[in-house]
Image (tube, rainbow, N blue to C red; front, side, top):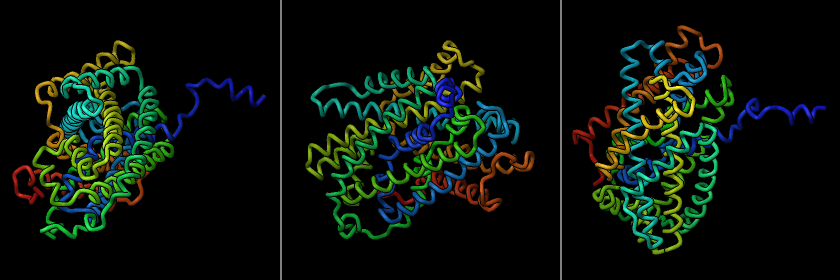
Length: 419
């Protein structure tokens, strides 16, 4: 009788797997943005980069948990717009909404640009000529179709692509690790031995590289008001991303000398430039091919996760329902503006990632901390509360403020850059 009862349970009533949610988070984080990290952090170099990545992971994870804490006091499917308007007022909600739309649209544009660059490089590797602009736009249409289907379709596709990406990662970086040179990793040949002056410029890029916050309301919509399962998704997904980042920094900085990153940055720092630099250093066709396929999986995973967050946010703000027609309207609103920008400006990956980091400080770090504080005052956070109390909120707020200030100083040319 028990077996019959269990097997007759409708699929919709079963609790979704934590692995699927973790794959959405990990897939959203580890994407095209990881290719900007070695270029931006080359001035700080390896050990400084490890320290900054650990600190950024800690702060962004807890800001995501603060979103969860506040979100649990509202209906399933409520987005930042609903929660922020109720807890922080209409003025802050409008400002926060503008920053969310700016960041997610900017990242979507960056991934269209990155996907075009990667697919163009892949086609060249296979002896086929295909323009980067056309590649990016066609790939975007494929992603839009998957997003239009359902969140479950995104979860399944992300799990599949993320699994392939992990396999390609270990095959690729297993080869790269074997070529790591201690003199390169320890920077024993560089003409300049100053590292910490380049610290501040890295922070906005690290924040963007741990951007998953738009998916927290989507996870609650997927799992229901189950804070422990959603917390497990956030912790495990971000830890996987952190581990992959650390291995990537070891491989890239252990194979490319610090001075060589100046030329990569001056050539725009796009993905194909970095892959070509690694391939030329190693002189290995197999590793170059694996790096190419890994970059395809990385872009696809992150593209799916970011656009899912933007899709759900716009559906809530614009009031589109979950019917096929309503989802089509949301898909058009999600993908049409960045596709237009990518058609006009096909190369803008590194600049887009940097500007996304500036706006992300508001909605991914500062607003979550303010939401947690306001939520505790009003509701007492009966379902879930992030540990650390007021000091944790202050730490997250400080991190956001420093990131915003750092990018503004960078834009005005007041920070040293390794170029």
